[in-house]
Length: 302
Image (cartoon, rainbow, N blue to C red):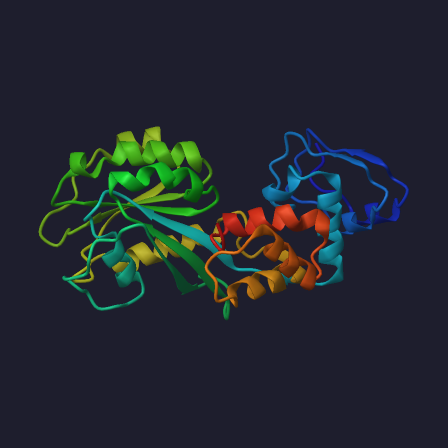
């Protein structure tokens, strides 16, 4: 029933095995990075925030390497992924425009494939802190649905957008909620009804909330008039602050590697090129896979 591990564990430099399963731990101390002789670390049945989930399956050496990098130099990161899903022609892209304070464009074409943007919003409690939401706006056509398994990652914010004028059935809301529940079971969901200026949204909120407890709210907006946009943005901001990785300390080497990737002109690279970027930014080899998966979870890369 341990709730924490003291930082003094870093003095046990000859420790080779450590079994922590069955405790109430949420994170491990950075001093774990001093345990160079640790060969076996059992973290079974723990709901850890740190280390990131992408690390745990990579083994003990990857975890120790991560904490060693944190001890060397670390920074707080304020990034998450926000995924916008729903049927085609429901106003998903226009809603994202509204969140970015852009003017309404009635002639905006339907999204085909994925539109990737960045939404910067201030932290609701911490002055001077800006949260970066990597927004992935999906075309709603059926031909794209088979790709969702690659893009709908857990610990993201999900916006399920439907058109109140077209109606509940046309929005296929239960189908979308089932998909999110299957692929991203820990993610908060905001259900957004568009075109609500003249017609209120009509859907079984109590029934849906009971079946899908990750729904944090139902919202009615109108992209043209701006109705409900600020209220939606408020709840998106609150959902972002509660995500697992928001504000988490990361090794500076990880952050530097991410910045180097973004500076590339290419939109895709080979695995060897990615690993060379990691090497150039002093990411340990034992953390290559973990860092790639972590950046995937944040919507920085696929």
